Image 1 (tube, rainbow, N blue to C red):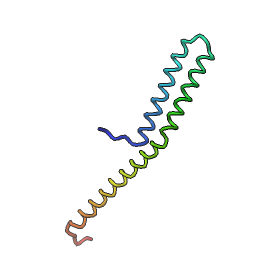
Image 2: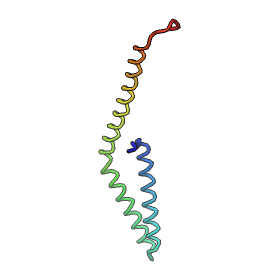
Image 3: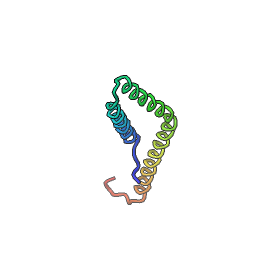
Image 4: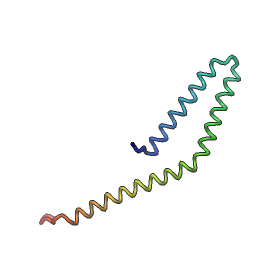
Length: 94
């Protein structure tokens, strides 16, 4: 399973959102009245905005957890490197 960065997730969501709205707009073009088409697009944008706002808190917690995991991985890597450096024999150049 590939782990996506927060930037990758945000970019993916942006693409999904754009395509979703394009599909709704294309579907709306088959409607006869322009006002009905606009209303449908505005409703979709409003609904997506509501869903995004509802997920914002959870998304922030996920981002914080992801950042903590990345920092823990980096710290573990640095500790391994430091431990390895301690075990290696010193040369006269040092």
